[in-house]
Image 1 (cartoon, helix red, strand yellow):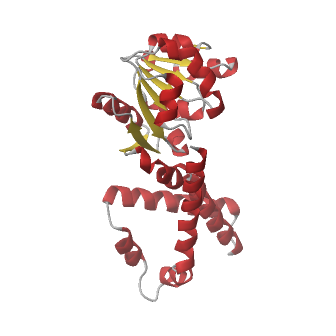
Image 2: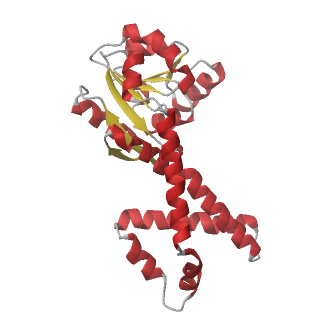
Image 3: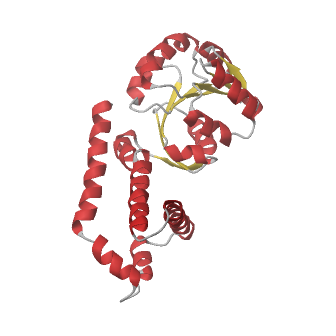
Length: 260
């Protein structure tokens, strides 16, 4: 199976890195320097012609900017067939919009990835048009699973996904920033405070994922009665904190619906 990419930005590179057979990949990128960079790094076949990708690839990742979708669609739509699958990682482009742009022949899959894809630890939500064969969805799950975790959902859930995992990396980084600043106020050097905060967040997420432990028992287990964690949680565990988080997600989901 030849895998194609229309666009070769950082998110596309994150997916590319997870593909075992780089020799089966062809990527279209208009910037010559970027083409040369990826050809050197991965040994993939690069071109500046999106039509060449449409002619050769059976599974095609659409990874361009939202404002470039119409131009790309105009170039490749006449070439797409019912044997091909177009996988869009473009923000705000619903399956209905993709069908209008690329036609009804091609199978359509929409993916909402997040930035952690670039670190081989992404979270990708997947949805597909009704006509897309299950085998095609499984193939995309396998590829994206090599770059993190995947979940198949209904498209109606994508605004919530965008708010939680799509925008989530910024919220985690903001929390880390607050922890670093707090550590500095306690006398730590900034680089030491960042290391402590970052590794703590990473390790906690890794443990929770691998153990499957419920969140509340974990929190209670760390909060020894009368201990340091309990003293800190007394400041953090207030209704306002969770209200702020819920409002943050609601605002992001609302904006996602507006952009769609």
